[in-house]
Image 1 (cartoon, protein in one colour):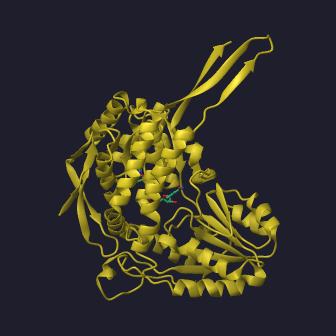
Image 2: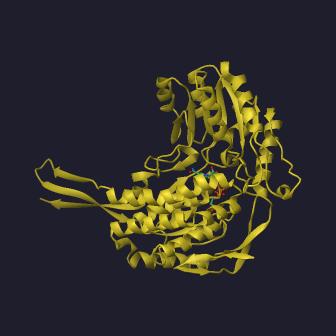
Image 3: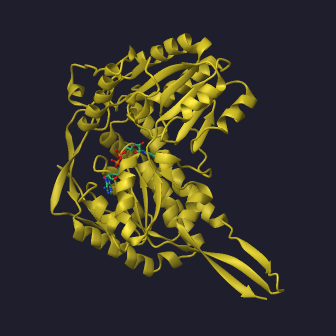
Length: 484
Ligand code: NAD
């Protein structure tokens, strides 16, 4: 049986205990994963601190950027290994891992390698009211050791989205991948070594959250900042854990995102876009839409088309190139999603399609598959319309007026993403600017430019990453004032 080890100071290190890495497509055990206890987390943080002092922070920006480009090259040269690792751990279709997850991982390193080379710093020519003159300029310095805690839905993409800018800014990192998806972060360690990233700059500790590697890392007094992607409640627990040592935090959290469809939309483009926004990655993308609001004249037609789309998605082996939807990540997560399907029925929903577990009559029946599901007819106050489900499911509701749609979309404690579907340019801008969300798409979804601000409001997060926002989070800007 394959072992997945921790990676500390350039070495693969076993822990005292192991836990299984499960393939969600058929429930089989892929590997045994070494759990890091407190002392291994201490070692990893110590190694990261040593590497910081040892000079990663002082490596020239040009050399650091070149090193990150070599990491991107090495990811691309082991493209198939990363795709296999990601597919086996998550159950996502091979077509998705090879067009989204792995290319984006390489792109993350390239984007931040290039950006750090061109990142300017502020300077001010100063004249005080009493006539003194000075020159002020800021110096960009690393934060120090950054704890990176990430989820299972886009494991490599979300990990590298944080590791790339952190390393670009001269920090060292200790990463804690999800216990569900430990493989690609470990493979990345091999790539870091091959690309010449000095030992101790990138460390990996495996384990769970509370009373395990995640909590040990968040609490650690020698960790200077924690960057986290995951559930909002976990964000709250991490905030508590970092409070005594007042670490900087960047939080990318959950969502209950809305799509608003106006009757003047391009119908085909909208049906395709909304279906993708509900079902991609079996609905396990933080940006997925779980609430779809449709202008009344188009409601019946759009619901029928969405139903047709859902019923024609091909569920199957992630290894089949034509598979559209793989399983959910775990048995536990499927139980949670099924409990929401049941809750929606109990709350009085009309089931448009789905609502159950598919049968394959082969090994996939041991996997954690679930039917893509559409509900209608619930009041906006229903729990299943308010709470994040994180599965291939949406509730569709009609609206009559633009203001009503905006109010319904914004009636949530979350605020991560929204999409608006209309051919009216003015309306697109007008509605987008009123969305209470970190990102709003018009006539598209999940179209990302890595330089733009990314994050959420309310329960969906704290801070922004992306482009200069990432560089500013992962650096300390120290001001120098020179009397002239
Ligand atoms: P999760 O919060 O359960 O776990 C995320 C990570 O945190 C894992 O590595 C886990 O081991 C660790 N963790 C859990 N409890 C911890 C604790 N007390 N202290 C330290 N670490 C702890 O999330 P998940 O189930 O892996 O991922 C799904 C969630 O992530 C959804 O809510 C989704 O919306 C969110 N998400 C958000 C974004 C975004 O960019 N906003 C992106 C992807 C996923």
